[in-house]
Amino acid sequence: MTREPGGTELGERIRHILLEHASIEPLSELLLVLAARVQHVHAVIAPALALGQTVVCDRYIDATYAYQGAGRGLPSPLLDELGRLLALPTPDLTLYFDVPVATAQARRRGRPADRIESEDATFFERVRAGYMARAAAAPARFVTVPASGTLVEVGQSVVTALDGLW
Image 1 (tube, helix red, strand yellow):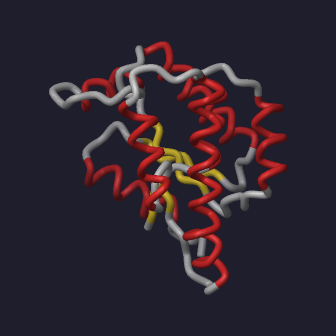
Image 2 (cartoon, one colour):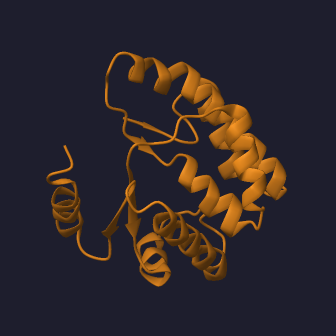
Image 3 (cartoon, helix red, strand yellow):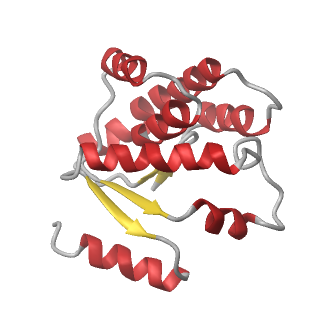
């Protein structure tokens, strides 16, 4: 189990910058995310995969297309080319937890928001659309999990979605 950005000491430092810095240009944000990812892949993900282990990562490549691509408006060809140049592995499976933006925002109420969580609903509608576009483009790799229900209901949806995949 690991997460992005994060998963390594450098990745956690970059995560702090990404979430707590007041203002970051979209291209700078992308490059920071990718710097953390390269470190993460080389230090954590690739060695685990080489040992035949299963890696579960909270966010990865598809999150970049959703947040920096659809959300921030950076072009997909740029993301494609950077991904190609960095030779990062594509996940075998992506679980996309789909929840309406209003529901997600209501769940966050009362908690302090970081820089990304502070974005408006329009940003998150673009992010959600970005995830849905990725899922539509790679249906064999994506499992969309309805995430509007309770934690138990969402957990059961995950079990149901994964049942028979292995």
